[in-house]
Length: 196
Image (cartoon, rainbow, N blue to C red; front, side, top):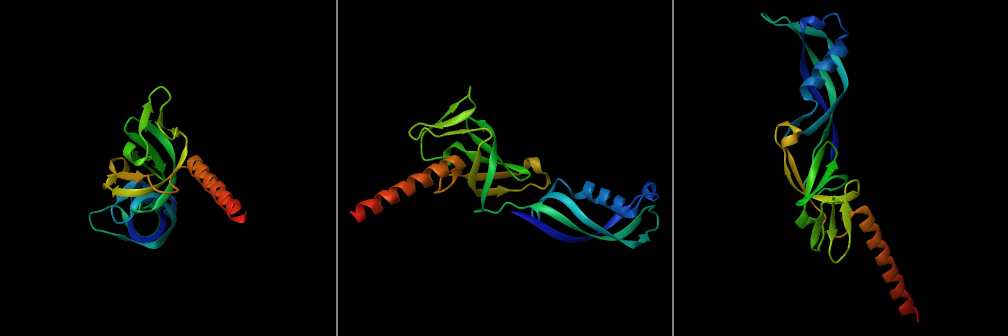
């Protein structure tokens, strides 16, 4: 889930930046500090926005920088267990697929893709269902549910998100559309039978 959070902090303006516009320097320092980091409480920090800096700063003894109070917005992504998301398949492997959801990739293990025996076609880079003949390959848009979240502080690369598509109306969007159309046809067939 994406969130926009309002934050208050103090930013240090280094002496070599005193001749630059205060708000531009504060924005630069805050982006270097926050963007791309992971917080267990906040989630993955994507962007620093709407920076407002106090004109009055403090100089501390023995430190050449000036400290200013600052308020700003953080755009964050916090994956929530049981949340249904849509994303693009960015990699297909013999053990599952990686799906891009916001700033991070989630893994759908091969056992969590579909209720069918799945084989991996290495040449095509796709997973195929034996009974259903459904194919999952790079570039497809899928709908999945978040089942595990492990956010590691620091770089977002070490965080892990587990996903499942083994529930009704989850899977590749094309599969969901097929299932809906099939259900509609069955209902129409039942209505016709009852009408006779």
